[in-house]
Image 1: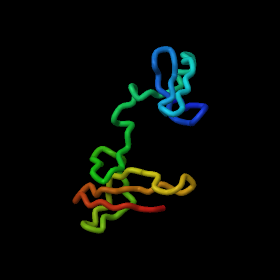
Image 2: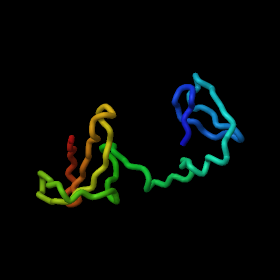
Image 3: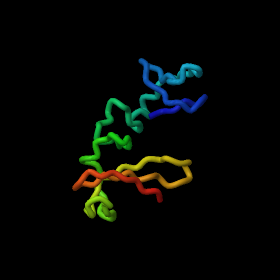
Length: 109
């Protein structure tokens, strides 16, 4: 992923140029094909790389925590996702879904 030097927005490839996605900026630069091997593009990103934190998210298949206890059923295993809900210097919030009963909760560190 490449970011615009002018405004900090993401850039996208258009032909032989990288173009800023911020319509108000309009910056573009020539693509550096030698550096592109260092970048991960959205075309190469799979759904396995995406972490859902929405309340309606399907948690199944996400990482599991075994250091928690569900208040509803007492199960000690839950899927979890992380989301930065406060400023960047604060720790992320962990969102859990019980693997047994489906109860959801969050944990602030």
